[in-house]
Image (cartoon, rainbow over all chains, first blue to last red; front, top):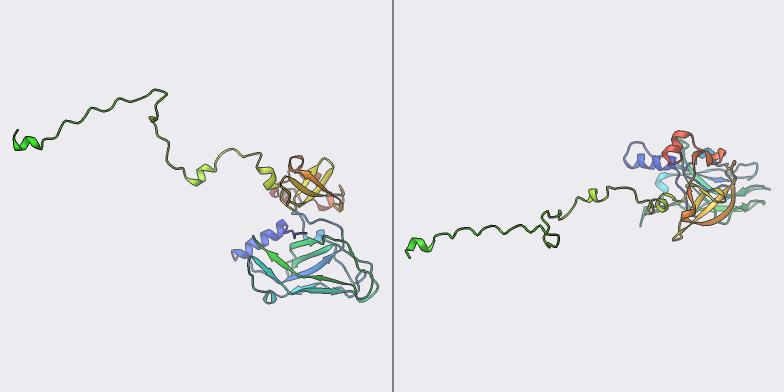
Length: 134
Length: 127
C-alpha cells in the first residue's frame, strides 16, 4: 500500500525545500491502531507500539547522512528491524515517521497485509524507509 | 513618352470593396493568432474533471455506504475507499466505487477522533 504524506508533512517538506526551516532526522515508529492514513492526520493520530505490548520495541532514529543518494526520484534508507524479545500482544498495522525534534508527522504507510501479530520472542517487523517523488 | 514618364508611378488602385456577407471566407476581424497560455486556462471550472483530480489518496470522502478514506486511485473510473467507523475513524471495510458516486466529505462527516479543526479542515477542502 502506498505511503501517505499528510498535510502537516507536506508543509514541512515545502519549508525545507525553500530553506525556510531546517530539516531534522526522522524517527521510524510502528503503529497499532487499525487506520488508513489520511491527509488530516497528525502524529497523535497513531498509537505507537510500546514495550508492554511489544517487548524490545524502540523507535528508530534515521540519521540524515545515512540515507542513500537519491536516484531516479527515489531515496531510501537501509532496512530497519524491530525485534520482539518476549511474549507480546501487539498487532502492527504499519509505520510512520516523525521529525526527531518537532515531532511533526512526515508520512505513514499501512501494511497491505495488516495486521501483523507480534506474539513471540523473535517475531520481527522489517521496514525499508523509502520516499519517491514523481 | 518621355524618359520621366516611363518611371511615373501609376495611380494606386482603388481599395477593394469590403466583403461583409456571411459567406465571406475572410472575416473582417481576424482572430488573434495565439493567446497567452495562461489565458487559455481561465474559465469556468470543468466540473467533470475536478472530482477525479481532487479525490486523491488520503482524502476523506462520503459514499453511499458511509464515510471513508481514499486509498486506491489506480482504477480508471473507480476509487478504492476504506470505509471507517463513523466516530473512531478505524478501518471497517474496503470498497470500490465509481468516481461519480464518491464526493468529498464535509468536516462534520469526518469521524470525530480524526477530524481536523475548522481552519485546517477548510484548508484541506472540508467545509
